[in-house]
Length: 280
Image (cartoon, rainbow, N blue to C red; front, side, top):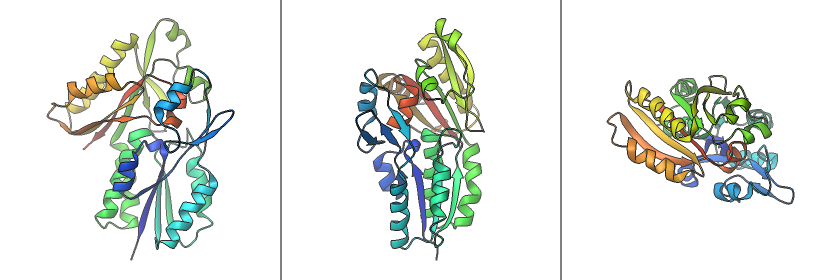
């Protein structure tokens, strides 16, 4: 009899309530300041992070190896036989590799580490889908075979107030923009199939960039039913306005807002606004 555990990391932006409801085990990234260290979403909130950025831009680090080891040991003690670990894009973090290495010391756990090649609620939606399959009694082999299908169905688009934080954090990917910033051009960024940030389009100013995001979402909704997450980083009023404008669309299956966690917020800064689109 298989007893399957689903593991992810805090880059999935799944709330503590969702983690608990779906019995998902999450590894928090570390937020490191000159005088202190915090666990992403555990001992520091997104808004505490944004409030601190003017004083100091912290660095981020992989989940603590002791934490990974502790979770794996506890899973064995609780009788789990299989582990499916679904992690943030390996182009942005080495978490997948760290977990893969840790699992080598736990041969009693049959495991599979999946590089989601995405982040935030796009990663979170894959994790939730996998956890639902566990509840439905699907086998380990069935679940891992479906993960690429779930990845193909999710799309991530967002805009930023500034590229400063992506540049400082070394996460700029294929997003270009120094000259564009001088012209107040705001990039619409998407996460490619390779898990790297890329420029999808540019818009003049904040209002136009948000309108472009809406056009992108409406394009998907004109073709398919979708689940939509509006992701925001210290832009809750704008995200609520978009929620109210879109929620009556008949092709939306579910729609909600989600706050980008501290570890991702370090690299995007305040003002991120975007969409995770899951085609059904």
